[in-house]
Image (cartoon, rainbow, N blue to C red; front, side, top):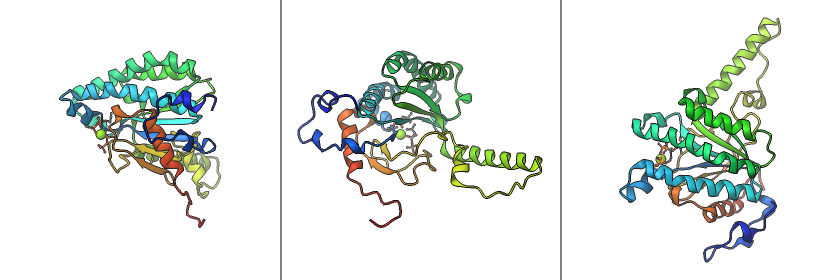
Length: 260
Ligand code: IPE
Ligand code: IPE
Ligand code: MG
């Protein structure tokens, strides 16, 4: 971390103690299920897309705050493989919002030394959206700061199927070389086929809007992650909410199956 806490959090609300944050225990990888945009809009009698647009500011603030605190990977769940079931105008609006936002934000992210990448099947996205993500990746790929992982058209079951397929393909290749294809598979062998092959598992998963489920997010990777659920709807999420989530994480007793 290279910025003082009172710079990152200039106006902490009453009762939120910045000093309680253990700077030696900042998670390397925070994954966020950004939920509640639709309900935020509904409360204001607005179109759901207005909720998604309002959520952009929360994304910006979370990225900045995580990067300033020294988080190495921030994964944001932006569109699931199941989200295609939504009304056509919402899907089209979201894809357009992703493309425009990525184009508008990439220079600022680059200045922050953030590296942008995606997980998920980009091939099914409209060309403009796919290209915006690809350009952001190209531009920022050599940065050395936080990696922003955008999960877009991401589905964990699909990812796991892909990894299984990769294992089968490797076994067939071994058989074709005359080697024994029935080599025992390790967790590391399998994880090589996941989108997240070169990313550590998240220590913490944050979900907004009070929902208590994973919705097909990082099923393999969250085996020992801590879950922090907040009732805040995503567009109302800000750096202070992020701090509260980190404090909740730091208060957990992580045992990984052992006795402490
Ligand atoms: C999360 O907000 C954003 C996406 C899934 C793209 P929602 O759109 O799911 O908001 P709610 O859950 O309907 O309130
Ligand atoms: C999960 O939220 C997906 C994203 C945040 C992109 P959803 O709103 O789609 O999840 P469900 O339908 O409530 O489980
Ligand atoms: Mg939702």
